[in-house]
Every structure is written in C-alpha cells, then in structure tokens.
Image 1 (cartoon, rainbow, N blue to C red):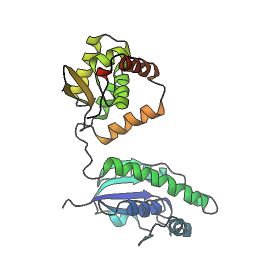
Image 2 (cartoon, rainbow, N blue to C red):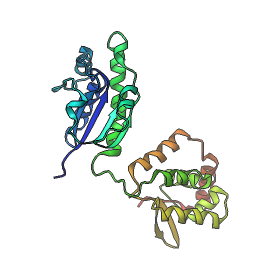
Image 3 (cartoon, rainbow, N blue to C red):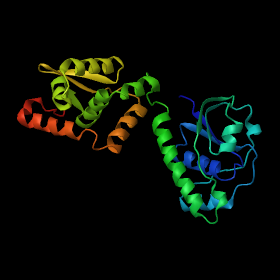
Image 4 (spheres, helix red, strand yellow):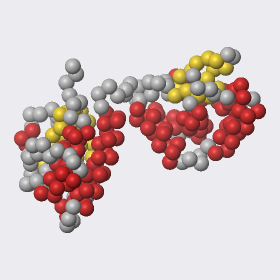
Length: 257
C-alpha cells in the first residue's frame, strides 16, 4: 500500500485558520494524507474554532496548538501557508516538495461566528479543489504549465479546444467549417496538440476525429472546463456554424460511442 502523503497548514498563531484547515481536510480525506497544522508563534486555539466545527458536524479530533519548531524533523509533501506572516517566514521551508499560499483573512479580528464560518467555507472550497488535483493516483504526467498556457494563447487553438470540450469529438472538416479557417492551418494546430498529447484521435469511416486525451491531467481539464463555462459566448458563432453543418449533413455529426 502506498504510504499517505503529508500536508502541513501553517499560520502565525495556529489558533484559527490552520486549525480549521486541519480539521476540514482530515474530515474530507483522512486516508490519503497525514494532516498537520502549526504556527510560527503558536497561541491557544480560539473557542470559536470548536463552535464552528460542531456546527458543521466536523470532528475536532485532537486539535492542539503547535510550534513549527516542534516539526523540524518532519518531512511534508505539501506546506500551505494561510497568512502573509507565515508565508514570509517560511518561504523556503526546507522539508517540503511543494509550497502553496492561500490568502485568508484572520477571522479572530471579528466578533461572533460569522467570520469563522466564512473562513471554514473558503477552506472547504480550497481543500476540495486541492484534493481533486493532488490526491494520489491523479495523473500529472506531461503536465508542463508553460507549454499548456502557451498553447492556449493562440486564438485558433483555444477555439478548437473549446469546441471539442463542448462536442466531445470533431473531425477536421467540422472544425474548418466552424472556425472559417483553411484546412492546412487547422490540421497544423491539431497535429501540434496531438504531439503534446492534449488531443487523441480515432477513425470513423473515412474521417479522423479528435477528442481530448483521456490522459490529460486533471488540472488541464479543469482549466478548459472553467474557461468554457466562464466565457460561454466565446464560440457562439462557431457553434451556430457547426449546428448548421450537422443539420445539413447529419452523417458528419458526432455520435456517442
């Protein structure tokens, strides 16, 4: 069995944000990760942490306020800082494979539970995304951010990917009609994305169809899906042309396998 990864949530006091993060993370995933929290200048845990966790029906477990120095010998796969002070003091934390910073306002500065509940909600969203992209078994092969975002910077390639994101698979003729680009240009972009393993192909009759690779890392899929949903009108005209093409020649329409 693969040993669990380790993660440390770090802030100055280890009294609110990092304690909430530790409890919420362990509640969402207590199997794949060993979860820790600590502070650069630890203080006692704010009672509102326990009240917030109880309200959310999340076990407080054995939460304790700990100093970073108590963990000097511990290796962490991830260190996530939750305040600017901790980020600045631990920017080169020596025993970590990856450093992240989630900038969250300290809820202790406000009265009542509302700020703590908002912090817990924000942490839950961050943690949910983190687990989706970083849990053991998530594919990260060939995931070079620079190459991927350079690819997306070209308008034609981006529109191709947005169309394929919508339609699941399209052939060269479909894309030529939708984009109103010449075939050689479309084919060149498709070949480039296939070489980078962004797209894969399969043959149906005389046509080669392109689709997103099953091996595409999860974070890349999320970028494409977020872009498509965040800019829903980006390929309106292309979609209209594609629909007209499918209505005119149903045999070219993408069919589920």
